[in-house]
Length: 230
Image (cartoon, rainbow, N blue to C red; front, side, top):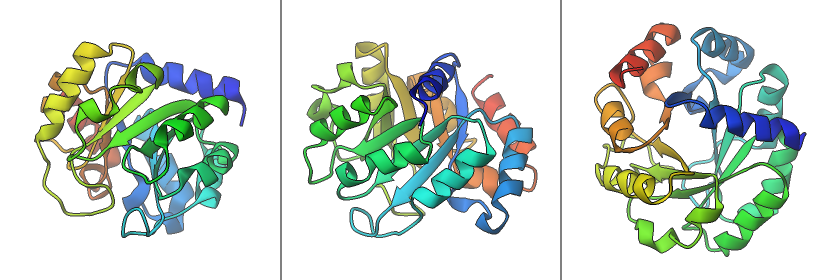
């Protein structure tokens, strides 16, 4: 990984007031190159990749080869969300595969503070995710030293959950206390919920079905942007 490239990618994310970030879990992996082309034509400015290990969360998704394959086919910033039990064993491989930002969970059994330091030493964006039941106060000590806070409005790894508005208070508090943070929100983000998250302080909105279950990705992205007044 070219650390200068990763730094430029993070600066690009910081330069935008609001970015709709597709989560590729629901894309057609049998036609991945076509899906990336459709997303780029739709005007998306970053990609979110959910990596699940079947241990930290019950689902199992993909690993480094998919990240590497996507990196070869796009210059968009790649935000890799590691929902895995022992991220310290894999962060360097995901950086080598092309991640511009690595996000780990505060709820892992490892010392997540040490893993955040490990990510920073690798020269990419440093992200921390918290589930709905994790209070912002529990991670307050590290917030001044990370680049991005991912607030989950649903429990990581479980599909079909309703948007939990507890995330809004976390976003507004984090925005008031840590102006430098990129605030990302994930889970149940659609036309009905995206504006409240924007008003609370989020600038990155991870979206799945509100894009991939629509016939026209461009129209879907435009409607989401319109919902937040962009």
